[in-house]
Length: 163
Image 1 (tube, one colour):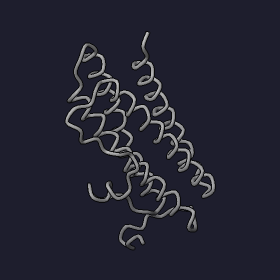
Image 2 (cartoon, rainbow, N blue to C red):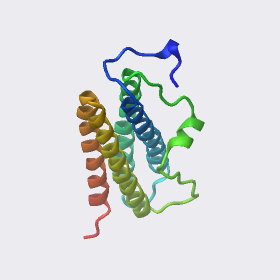
Image 3 (tube, helix red, strand yellow):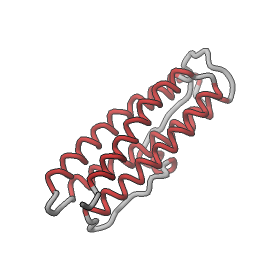
Image 4 (tube, rainbow, N blue to C red):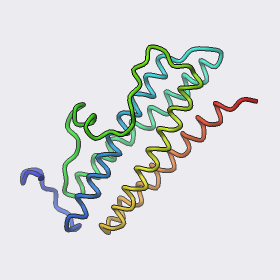
């Protein structure tokens, strides 16, 4: 339950906004997990395509991080509260961490591609919740985040193609 001190005025009503906030908090947790994994791979990539992958991972991580504040603020605008800590992220994330000592560049590309596609699924779920809540602002902004995640998955796919 939202503390009365944090209650944001909104014309959105009912439990539907809680569903939107819950979905967005999942997207936020996955975005932070994906950001950190992308940075991990950026720091630890090696091999003949080092420069290309290193730069691509850094660009993608920056794009992911840029969405986090927008996601959290959207949750607050709907009269709800958002994540508060690394532990809170861990409790909500569905993107699996990768703590391996070594990950091949090809496996990095594949894993990040799949994680971005999982994020697309989570965004579509959040959009459906926003539609049900009559929250057209959230619906609209989710389209941009979905397009960005799809583009990242595409670039990761193309970078990993042989031939």
